[in-house]
Image 1: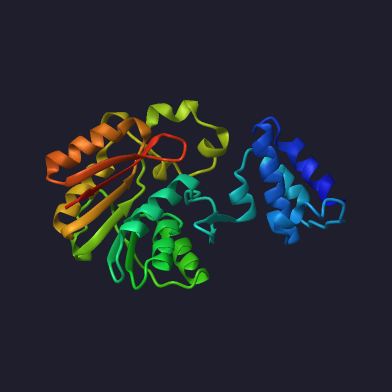
Image 2 (image 1 turned 45 degrees about the vertical axis):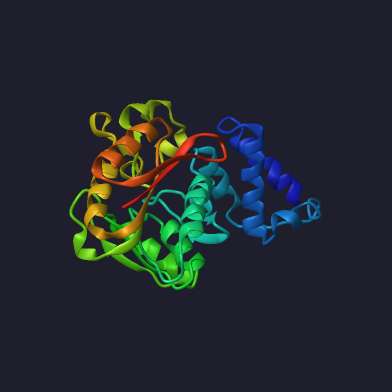
Length: 276
């Protein structure tokens, strides 16, 4: 089998699940991962022979709508590689924008808390990118704690991982200069409109909230921030695009200042940050 044939076979296997552009991107990602090519190298290797021992297993999983990141066991985020598997959310490119904003606003040696860290993508990236940062990351999931710890080791950074509930009092963790979170925020009623590769495979506890209290995590984290953020400390959220104004109003009512609702590269309101 040549590289070209492998790519075409994968494209055909997923063509009913993804559009043509995404099917091609997934096929190239698999071949690069299994054959050791970079994306830039792939174009000159299309006619090379390639041997992918678990090729049929990959085809079977992808054609069942399993996300390619779970199939390969890893995802790229902020130019780092993270282990991902069932039980932790796959990090999204939009979240890289949130990390970039935190990095831009940070000084050396800040103390950062990541609430609901999942795979550890935000926490590990910040530990890597902010000089001298002391990073603490919390999650209620034992699987997330296990995987995030491996990702910190894999990427050569030190992060303190703590099991904690974002809906409870977290003040025992101490004082911070920055709190950042990408909490569950999709209303349960939106589940029926979402793609199979998300609904059937990614952890619902990391994605969905009850329709009648969709801001529960934001409220709890912000309330904790009132006690845990040092004066002038900053709170950063990734948000659902429909909730920007509601979250901003809530933060102002709680006493936060300099509240900003920002759009992502797709022109959707996806981030809110504020000052204690």
